[in-house]
Image 1 (cartoon, one colour):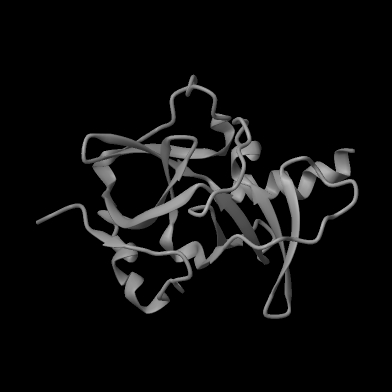
Image 2: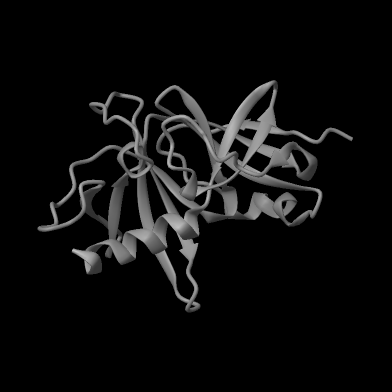
Length: 178
C-alpha cells in the first residue's frame, strides 16, 4: 500500500472538501504543502477553505507586524497573516506565485475562525503516513518551533507541519498584550 499520495493544486483552486475522506484514516492524513523561505511546510487539508491570489488588504490600526490586514471573503472579514513574519522568518516582497491560503481553525471554546496565511506558493496535496511524522526538534533554524506540530518526511525532504490552533490562539492573544 502506498503511504503517500500527491495531487497538484493551483492558485485560485477551491479545495474540494468531498475528496478528503482519506484524512480520516488513522494511518495517514492529507496535507496541503507550500513553500516558505525555501522550506517545505504543510497544513491539514481539512482546514483549507480555498487558495487565493494576493490582493490588497485593508490595514488594521495597532495590529501586530505579522498581520497584513483583513480581506472580505464573501461577506466574512478574514485577517491575513504574513506567515514568514509570524514564524520569525525574514519578510519578502510578494511574487506572482505568492498566495493566501484561507483556513478554518476550530479553537478551544468550540468556535471556528477563518484566517488567511500569505505563503510563497502552494505545492501539492499529500498524504503522510503516521510513521513519517516526528516531533519538532527544539532547534529548527529560523522557524519559531512553537507553531509547529511536527516534521514529516516526503520523498527524502523534510516538511514542517504547522499547528494552526497555536497560530490562531497566539494571534488572538497578541493584541490584548499590547
